Image 1 (cartoon, rainbow, N blue to C red):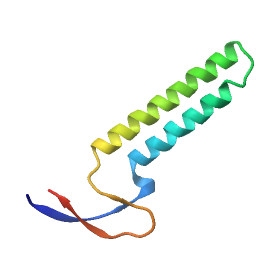
Image 2 (cartoon, rainbow, N blue to C red; image 1 turned 120 degrees about the vertical axis):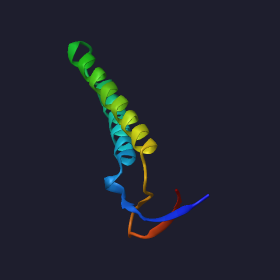
Image 3 (cartoon, one colour; image 1 turned 90 degrees about the vertical axis):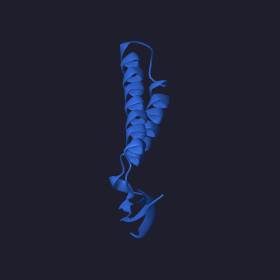
Length: 83
C-alpha cells in the first residue's frame, strides 16, 4: 500500500464538521419549537427543525465520504494518508 503526504485543512473548511454543527443546531431548534403554542406556527417550526437536522446529517455524511484531507484545529501540519 502506498502513502502520500498531504497538508491538513482547517476545521471550518470541512463539510463534515459543518454538517454536524447544523444537525446539532436543528436538534436544539426542535427543542425550542416544542415550547411554542400548538397550531400552525408550531407545526411549521417542527418541520423546519426536521429539515435543518436532515440537511445537516446529509452534509456530514457527504463530507465524510468525500474527505480527502485530514482536518486540524490549531495549526497546519503534513500527514501521511493512504493513496
